[in-house]
Length: 318
Image (cartoon, rainbow, N blue to C red; front, top):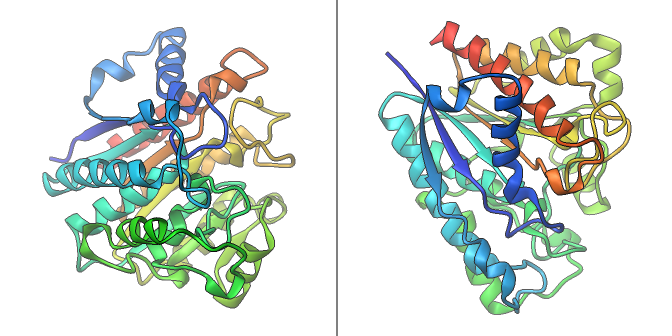
């Protein structure tokens, strides 16, 4: 019988602000406040964060600390694939969103012949590359690594040769590239993008459900459309960035908050529905930053409620 396993990844080396490494700890504080035994209930695995590199300069202007991120990708990929190959369900609790590319690599490493769909619940598309990024922050690039995409059509940067070498390692992690197809991506809550990402989404006809769509149709009806869109996929990975939620309804406890987001109730409803699906094989929560929380750990408390509800629903399914 499948068991739930928790993978803790406190890396924040790819974020533009500091503090996401404390997100997992903030979830644990929230669980204690809620008098929950959640973190004593499941076997947990920890990924070495490499956060010490934040104290060192980086030469990789268009992909900051990409050399260290290769190690994070590999570690996350190994842990995720290990859990999946044992027939269990990995829940990944991560700092910044960059390493989600490693999670996808781990799923494909475990199931190389399976077609993987991705539900990306996020204010941001995370489709930049070293050729298009305005910031150089790699937490804006994990989807591009999974797609094996450079997006040279939108190039504004000239990455160093060393950057390109490491970028190719990220894209080819687990020896599979691409790992997902553009047609097998669904965005929910997307509302804060740069022009290169917008044009990439338009060119590749990627499915996006906005917050307005959610309000008009309800999470249940949107989820039904997602199910139909990903009907040809064998497996589904759900990646939940807490900045998908409205900062005024929750808090600003995340690195890149964006107004007019999902309500906690809407986000939680989506997560519960996706937990029910037999194709859902992995879930990840990212970008909780208690250092930026203007309401004393409210973001982590909200995310923990969603996490615990998702897990309860999942337990009833597996």
